[in-house]
Amino acid sequence: MAKIRFKLNNKMIEIDENPNLRLLDVLRDKFGFTGVKEGCGEGECGACAILINNDVVNSCIVPLGNVNGKEIMTIEGFSLSEKFDVISSSFAEEGAVQCGICTPGMIIASESLLNKNPKPTDEEIRIGLSGNLCRCTGYNAIVKAVTKASKKGDGLW
Amino acid sequence: MVKNIIPTSLNEALELLNDRPFKIMAGGTDLMVQRRAWSQTPPEFIEDVLYIFNLEELKYIKEDKGFIVIGSTTPVEDLLHNDLTPFLLKEAIGIMASPALRHMATIAGNIGNASPAGDTLPILYVLDAIIVLESIEGIRELPINEVITGPRKHVIKQNEIIKEIKIPISVYTDSVFEKVGGRKADAISKLSFTGAVNIKDDKVLDFRIAFGAVSATILRRKEIEEKYVGLTKEELIGKVDEIVNEYDPFIRPIDDQRSNKEYRKTVALNLLKNFIITL
Ligand SMILES: Cc1cc2nc3c(=O)[nH]c(=O)nc-3n(C[C@H](O)[C@H](O)[C@H](O)COP(=O)(O)OP(=O)(O)OC[C@H]3O[C@@H](n4cnc5c(N)ncnc54)[C@H](O)[C@@H]3O)c2cc1C
Ligand code: FES
Ligand code: FES
Image (tube, rainbow over all chains, first blue to last red; front, side):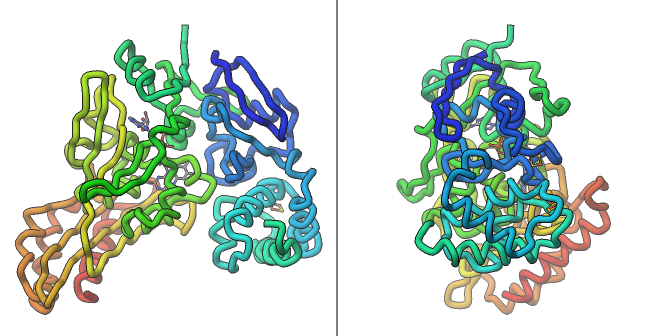
């Protein structure tokens, strides 16, 4: 056990827990943030993506001990922002959501990319989302959606 | 009783390591997968774990006395966006996994994991990187090839931490890192080739080659490289078959789920050949 303090979706949290716990399990089981999905459990699919200090990471391979002092944002927290509205409506308009299991991770990875690079090229979008697998869309619609979000949200990022 | 600790300073970490054995956790991108248990359960460690990833005092990249010095907990994504990072290192990091992974992964973890397929390792070999190990007793500086001794084997002592990585600043007129993997992102290397030359006034001043995942450790042979220093570019290109033959016996890959030894060897030698004839 160890005392771990972090900000979760804009709220300060302090817990006494085993730092070896996967952040994914903590977010889903202890806090009920089930928008964070488990796919591969090995860092390869991006279904469990969240933001730590605005950067996308895969929560299935982040130990709880590594988030001490950090700011964590899950799709639930992010969904309250204007940026989320721009990205999610762009995904909807471009038909970039089919079964939806990859979507929370895709939106988080898009946000992380746009934060660093508000006007990404198609190639940069593909690199930015390269850690997120989608079994349904074939990716083109997702790339278009991110381009659209970048245009619609001009000035937001 | 297991006692996992999140130290708040390097000194505290070094004292703890001197007290009893710990498993050091940096970004966790290797450890969390290797020690993975079932879904909804934490990974299993027999040792206590020491969490060093958030030691801010080890997050830096700076220039110092002819070296680029990289603090051990710096995530590789930060290095990708820093002007000080050597070109070849950026090439290797740029095709490591995905941004989500690069925000956590560290070079020190790549060294500690000591996989022959670790992508930053051939670059560290080619650039003659020096690994700075610190313990409560003081500092040891070792060249990378003396740190890693075999697959998953290294000489880092139980009470030591990789503090930083020092890369001598050097000039190359031509350099490449080629990774052969199953796909572009999120793929572990089947093999990799790194080449760097410095040709000035038509004279080869420096010639360096390394291969990843074709032998037990990264393959670099300085005695072969030295034979070709001093030649003109045309002479070097003219000796391409001889050079390929020199490396041939040292390329001893294995068969595994990612590839087979014949493929690995053929591609490795072709990459070497191509690098030289297109100089
Ligand atoms: C999906 C996925 C894709 C990947 N793709 C690639 C790839 O393309 N190329 C590649 O090379 N690797 C890849 N990896 C492997 C891994 O990301 C790298 O090896 C990474 O550099 C490990 O760094 P880390 O900080 O996460 O290491 P950790 O898992 O924290 O540690 C790894 C080892 O190093 C030791 N260690 C770490 N820091 C120190 C230190 N400061 N002092 C002493 N010992 C230390 C640890 O004790 C442990 O034994 C991938 C992994 C995953 C999960
Ligand atoms: S579940 Fe985390 S990356 Fe696949
Ligand atoms: S929409 Fe089904 S996996 Fe992406």
